[in-house]
Length: 255
Image (cartoon, rainbow, N blue to C red; front, side, top):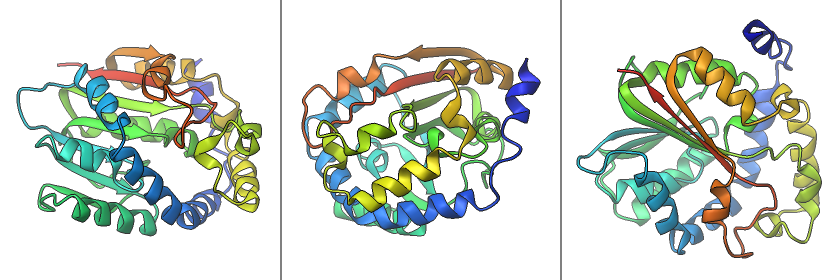
């Protein structure tokens, strides 16, 4: 059964990462504004509360944020004293994340964003206490490879926190009046998003159950899925609201 999960991703289009990167380059400015507003909102405290239900709170941790976007986790976790490195495939997003870090006066020797590929990490084995990711996995051409890499760079006893949703399956929601988080995005970009992500095999899988299966195969000792996670963060129907329900996946690397 596991072999079928691996074979499914071999035929992804060669240029799909270029298309994904181009799309998010166009989204960078608006995405920066939205994440800045979210940092300033009550949702930042909700995110911290949920994260601290999982990760140790008694010491600074070394954290990798995979697909960091405009630097949301860099700010809310960097402000808690953690060393956090964000990576993103899109240079413009890296620039925006580092701008966000500067705005909030964080020490860029311990909080920073650098270019990187989630499916091929440039870090040593067992380098991080925590790997965290938000709204990235659904965009990946080879998520199995990514999960192997995230497991590799985690220390024994470390945690993977992955927050995602089946956005491609809900692509019809992009133009819905209820999709307030995307209300300021032009229709051409929404159409581009729809086209790109329906090219990806992961868009057809039953998630997060597929992720749970793969993470167990990869070697995580404990995998917990919560399909109600988003309901505790996005309570109000405000500028951050998306109809697609965010789930959380927490996986622990065995000692």
